[in-house]
Image (tube, rainbow, N blue to C red; front, side, top):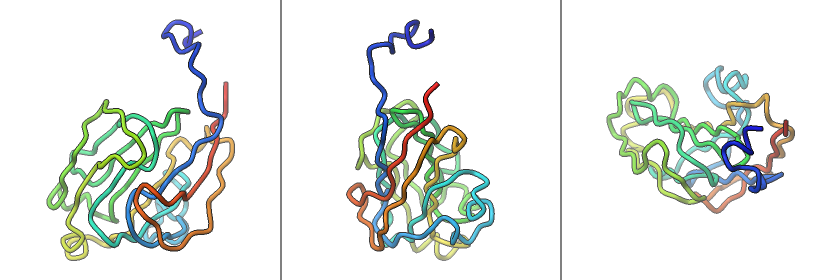
Length: 169
């Protein structure tokens, strides 16, 4: 019904989507994130990256749905409806935006590799608990299946880290 009302009836949603690394660095299992909220998958399921540089790109094609006022986290809704959260570092909310520059705004459409944020890796090392950056699907109850790839070093916008599909109505 809603699809017909809003003209979405003819657009096929992807049955499967790929999630890429949003930054250069080392892949880390979400269970190994040094924050129980992420490690115990309370916010969602996914992976994390120990960054080697201070740039974040979109890991998926979609729309920016949230930019936290402190610029340390960004939410993207994928074409199939997955809500992907990129949380730069651990306890970086306390930095109140210092060291972060955002290049997109809510409502922007993004492609894999679109530059989202630049941040000071040194400042996060100095002021936050960790630079490890969780990337999770927050509406995990809507995920039908997710397969994580066996990767070690990852390249922003190029290294495929997961394949997932969302439940349909």
